Image 1 (tube, rainbow, N blue to C red):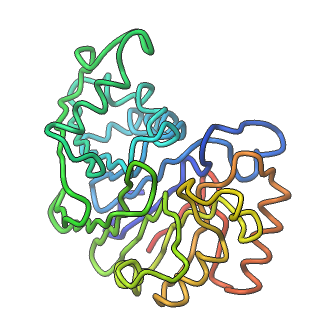
Image 2 (tube, rainbow, N blue to C red):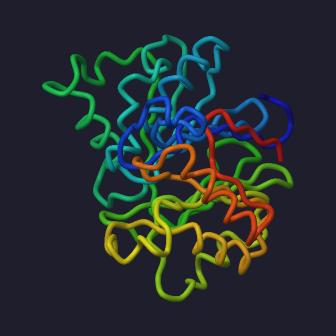
Image 3 (spheres, rainbow, N blue to C red):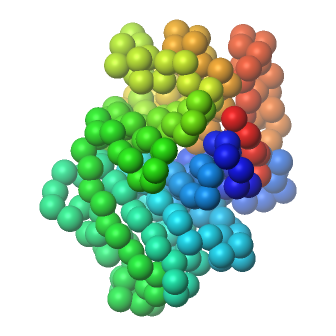
Amino acid sequence: MGTGKLQLKFWGVRGSIPSPGADTAAFGGNTACVELVAGNHTLIIDAGSGIRALGDKLCTDNSTSIDVFFSHCHFDHIEGLPFFGPLYASGRKLNFWSGHIQRPDATRHMIASLIRSPYFPIDPSGFKAAITYLDFQSGDTLHPREKIVVRTIPLYHPGGATGFRVAFGCSSVCYISDVEHRPLLETSLIEFVSGTDLMIYDAMYTDEEYPKYVGFGHSTWQEAIKLANAANVGTLVLYHHFPGRVDDDLAKIEAMAQAKRPHTLMAREGMEFQL
């Protein structure tokens, strides 16, 4: 990846906890991590366990321009960060962005709280890359690099979370995870994702399961389709898979979703798009 077009790759697609094994190998067992490449710049959304393999790739290809955005800091979205190779590579420049915690120096504090004794053998003083910590408020529009625009929106999730809309050239991608839908579609979210080329959406549950999990902060594949249709989204990618679902389960849900909306896919590790 690395042309003048916006490109995307999934490195982790699970929610809650990594789920490795033979029964999850087709869709993948790593937790949330998505890579976007815009020109010569790499943007990463979330640092679940999938970011480890992405970091190995970035070290191999000597990527030096990297921005990491956190939707929030529940463990399945940050647990891979201590194993992210570019942190320990001299000559790399990394920007870390978060907007879900409203306190001074929130992003730095979040990372320092994770990567420290007794949970990890080193702390941020062991980083060799040049790190910049950047705080914003969900709802802000960010300009991480020239010609790259990142709009943000607060999402309904315990402790808060941020949704992202990344635009580069004529292409856009929306990342809406983790979010609990409301009884009626929210006008602000419809407007936020309207007309995007590709929307990644939290489809942790089914409508039948959802009543057992009200308040957990997640949505369903049926609600994803409602939102995608209301907002005239191009491709819908269902994401943040329930950890107990095996490949056969996800394939069945994907088939049901495609019967209702043809331009719908279930996120798989290694899946790539060029927009």
